[in-house]
Image (cartoon, rainbow, N blue to C red):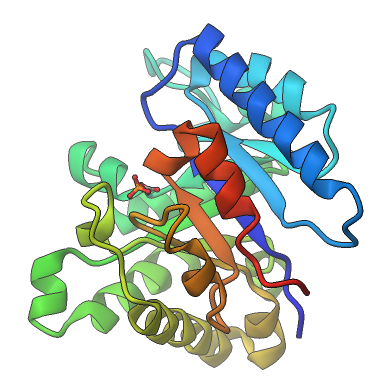
Length: 260
Ligand code: PGA
């Protein structure tokens, strides 16, 4: 089955509005050029900081195939939560996706699987699509419990969803030891885990849904290693941090799929 392919750029806490506009324009222009003479292109997502999200979303909404994501949102609909942003606010500016459960949110902001299940519901309720991040830390891989950790993250974060809703989720497998470290999972390690994730989805929701779901790889994915990672059967694209801040690198990654 040919699944949708996606390259998403997580800008994290980088780029002022002016810098972000420049980056988004460079990526959008490069994407339009790349499209010429091609039958097929992956979908591209850019996740700028909240403050730039309306501006960047306006730029990318002119370009078919490119969308914006928020990097987080609050689980409640509204209220006295100073400094937070709700899913309804994100939806109100026409943004399509929300990244949830990035390992930096889990580690530095104490986000648990249970909290992320609530955030997932909040996002879906507003018609937004979650990019749900999971991943083990190095000590868990070294102990050989990485499959259990991933299984638990999926079960506790997503398995409360109905069959009709789970299809809307994009999963991003990001081994924490590979994020921003320059250490990438090997294609074999990525494929092994992606196949495991798909088999867990199949166990709960059936093979048809599992085959349909998009599973991205993230963690030091760059212009040099993207093509071998994206060539893996169960890797449907990438969630890119550092390399998404450099237009040529990000465009090279977008161009890293074997022709379909
Ligand atoms: P990296 O980050 O590509 O800089 O490793 C990936 C991510 O955190 O999504």
